[in-house]
Length: 116
Image 1 (cartoon, helix red, strand yellow):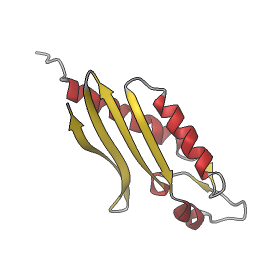
Image 2 (cartoon, one colour):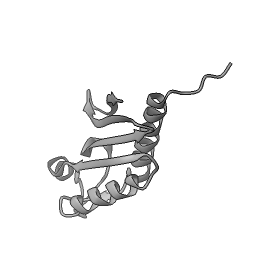
Image 3 (tube, rainbow, N blue to C red):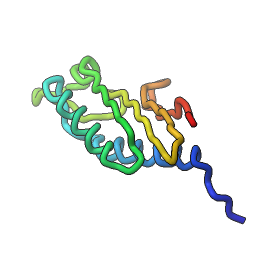
Image 4 (cartoon, rainbow, N blue to C red):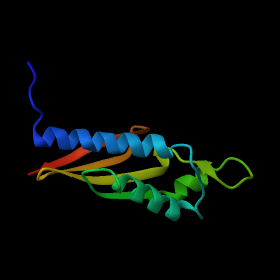
């Protein structure tokens, strides 16, 4: 027996795809406080290209980036601990809001709300 997913379930699935793409595409990218804002824009624009993606807001936390630089080259590798992300996905009239932020030492990706 197969059930057709609801629009809300499909919207949540789409959000998961966007988070997976965002995290695994950009993790390891060299980042410094001087380059963080251009990297935020690049990530946002790349993910917003995907279907059903209404908006993406990436904030790379410059204080955490500066603290993560542990060599003389002046950059750190981007990880989930260095950024916060909010996304809004729309699928067939259903919108989902999501967020990624540190929780208990881990970059937790969460469904914030489902809106019809």
